[in-house]
Each structure stands twice: as C-alpha cells, then as structure tokens.
Image (cartoon, rainbow, N blue to C red; front, side, top):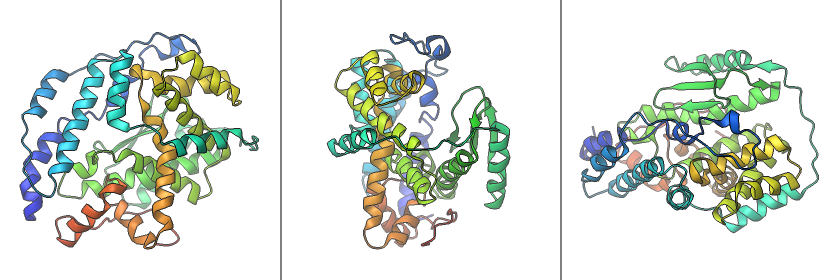
Length: 353
C-alpha cells in the first residue's frame, strides 16, 4: 500500500460507506403510474430506510487529512451531504433546485444552444421494430460479461422500466416489461457494460473505494463517455440524440422557474408525443427539481473536446481507471506514476487502443 493510499484509507471507507447508491430510487415518485400524463402531477416518494440527519452528523465529524487527496474527499463529503439534504426536502422545489445546482451544476449556454439546434432539425430517422424483450437483452449482456470474464456481475429483471447499473453491487437491472430493437440491445451493451460496468470493475480493483463509488462530479464524464461510446460504434440514433437534447431544454427551463405543464408543452412543440414529453419532464422535476439530465449531452461534448487533442488513446485509457471525471486526469496520472493505484485492466474494443 502506497503512502498516499495509506493516509486516506480510513477516511475513504468512512465517507464512501455513507454514500447513497439508491439516491435516484428515493427521488423517483412511488405513484408514478397513477400520475402518468397528468400535466399537474402531485408526487409521493418512497420512505427512507435510514436517518439522513444521522448520516449528515457522521460525515460532518470526519476530518480529512491534508495532502494530495484532501480536496477530493472534502468535495465527496459535501456531495453526499447535498444528496441527504435533497432527501430531507423532497417536494420542496426551491430548496431542492438549490441543492441540485450544487450537485450537478447548470447547463452551459453553448449546450442549451446545441440542444435547440438538434431539436430544430428535420426529424429524419427510421425506428427499428422493438420485437425483443428483457430476457433477450439479459442473454446478450450475459455473453458480454462472460467475454470479459466478469464473473461477479449479475443481471436481474425488475418492475422499474429503466436499465441501470449498480457499481458497488456489480449488478445490472433491466425493466422486465421493456421492448427493444436489435440496435437498442447493441447500444445498451456498449453504454451499460462498455462504459458503466467496465469503469466500475476497474475502479473495484483500486485500493480506494472512491474509484468505484465515484469521484466528485464524475457523473458528467461517465454519461458523456457512454454517449461517446454509442456514437463511436454508430449506435447513437437521431431519435435518442433528440431525447438527450430535450433533457437539456427541460433542465434549463426547470432552473429558470418554469412549471411542469410549461416544460411539457415546450417539449411537445418540438414533436415529442405526450408520453415522451411527460417522461422527460417528470425526470427533471422529480424530488422537486433535479438538474442531472443535461449532463449526458454536455458530457458528450466535453469528451469529444478532450479526445480531439493529442494523446487520445492515453486519455481514454486513463478514464477507465475507475469512476473519475475529466478534471481528475492529472491527479490520476500522478497516482499512477507514484504506483499508488494500478492501470485499468478492462476496456471495450476501441479501434485506436
């Protein structure tokens, strides 16, 4: 164990053990189906199976040693406290929106303008028939996990409609009633396994848990890299890109004080169906106002900008060391040089690596 790792080992364990891996579950309405398509929804939320005030107190008492990783752990501690404050204030829009900005930031004007540009283009796409089910996706994902020899990873079917990855539990969850096209299945494999699972697996091999729990603000890089992977493998269809663009518009409107019905109608004006517009709108107003959804498109643009520069293959390899962000690359490089952490083991097939 290196001297830097040894210095932060205990703090790493204490801070990461107080993280909230089910944060999105707790801010997802429990009465979603009952309120579906209601332009003035009133959401209820799942009960908490822990005391957020107790966790906040525990985190506040943790003293982070000065040195190389002090800023990382102080920011991680703050990030978890912000999440806990969100959970305490679910449904209180002003308070939650303020906390959301601290957690995720706001979309840049250039990102909002790019999103509008995407949505204003003529809709030209052919949608493949969705004739495959959750079991088909599960079977294909299991083949890929076997290919990478990721024996600890499990795939489960769920009542929830989304496809999600739980890095700490090494679990992929698929909505059991979802339907997929063949292209959907290929895209989800690249997105969920090629980025989320492989970065998590590499992170789990590191001596500090934060590499799998996630560095502060890592999520924009995580989702941007996943979209870049979709795009690089020619699987990011125009319809999906429009959805990511619509999410940016919805987040921007949420931060500017617009209500559910106004955001919903604005998205419909871009050609989205009632169901599509409602689903995008509820995601940004769940909990009171969570501005996470702009990070996909903005993250993609940041990854593209990073990889346009020299040493593309080197930077891409560094991003696979664990759940880190672009801003952490210099620190990660120093830790690798000092042999405090190990090089990433798992990569998807990139033509330039």
